[in-house]
Image 1 (cartoon, one colour):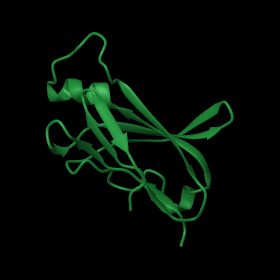
Image 2: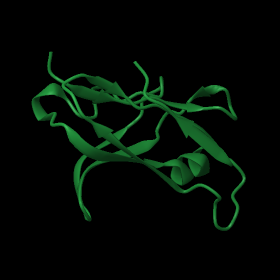
Image 3: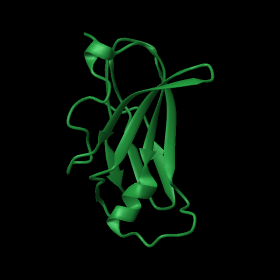
Image 4: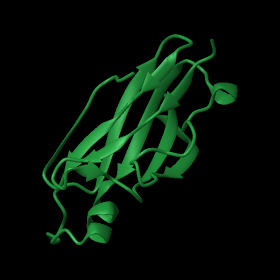
Length: 117
């Protein structure tokens, strides 16, 4: 089985999937970040396809950057100046050819993540 990466975003304040949230994926090597994908979540809070598909998968260190501030603005969440959360970066390693799932649970004032399945 070849590896691949998926993600899912849930808005815990609204109790619903975070639709329309932009996500960028970077490959990290030392101080270098190379953007390899940009996607937007669908109505289920997921990307329509793996954010890193099997054909592009390599083990290593990656970073997902979730554009939470723009999502909150689009949802009509009352703004602060500046927003407490704007871009949420999650850096993680993938060490084997496997399915990695990195979800984000987010609200205007906090977030959490874990390795899902």
